[in-house]
Amino acid sequence: LCAMLVRGRTETKAACGPSESEASGAHGEREEKAARTGPGQEHGGAPLGSVLDLGLESQTNRSILVLGDGDFSYSRALATSLKPRNMISTSYDDAEELRSKYPHAADVINDMMKIAPDSKVKHGVDARKLEDVFSGEMFHRVVFMF
Image (cartoon, rainbow, N blue to C red):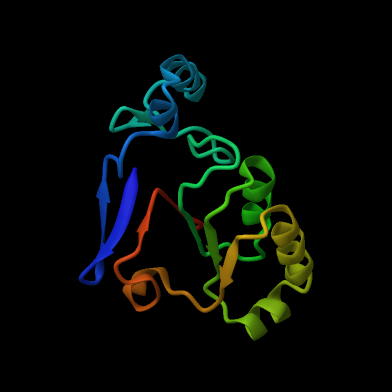
């Protein structure tokens, strides 16, 4: 599944290219992962996977956008599970409001950045207006925390 922001709206496509397992020629691994995800959890022929692997391999170069992650604990767990090289985690709250609501969030973000140092954090991101922040960018996975 690939999402791209186009002219103020998010468009999704079945894929942005071959899945990581197809690209590496590991078709059996893809089928095995599909079996683990269970029935009804596939989209466009590629398994969605669990909430902590998103159907991606560890140390993936695939782009991941996490929207509305409150205290960033999900992003930290995702970083621990996948060790992604291209993840952007966002909060709806601006940095000051985040510190007020979630005093521990700074520690969580620091932990996440140690695990996945190429990750980025953005505050004050309204998921209804993604084009203001990510206009034209494409993501292989978009996780919306609501």
